[in-house]
Image (cartoon, rainbow, N blue to C red; front, side, top):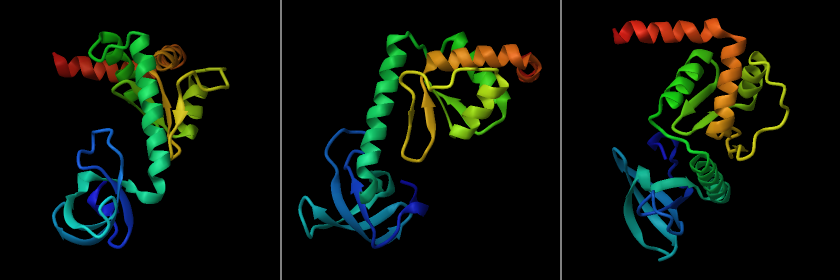
Length: 182
């Protein structure tokens, strides 16, 4: 978590290694020490233990741990769908999709293997692209913060529709990129 969002006296879910899939440990923050160091008391396991943590080890408020885990499962499923459909991070197609959504200039972003943004931004972009589909594609999900996430294949289709509907919007960004690379 970001240091600014951690509150002394609140309970949090932590992992010694934040990227590991180990079970959560339940702690209560006692004091901010300095920079990204916190003094914490364990509730489970090892009740009563007092030790020091870094902000990166504090993952989520204890009350939000289950939705946090569901988001992780949904994100892993989306990544599997992309892998099954042959997503390649450094392909020219991926770079083109990135360029399209940089040109869109809305609360929507293409990052790594997914398109993410507010449901309202998705509605606006889909309307601009004349995308008549009503439902979200297979593998899409809405996280605990209300942001929608799409896998790469439907993102590519939306990018194509957007380019067809608003070519000048996309071409301005592409031309600027070409000028910078010369």
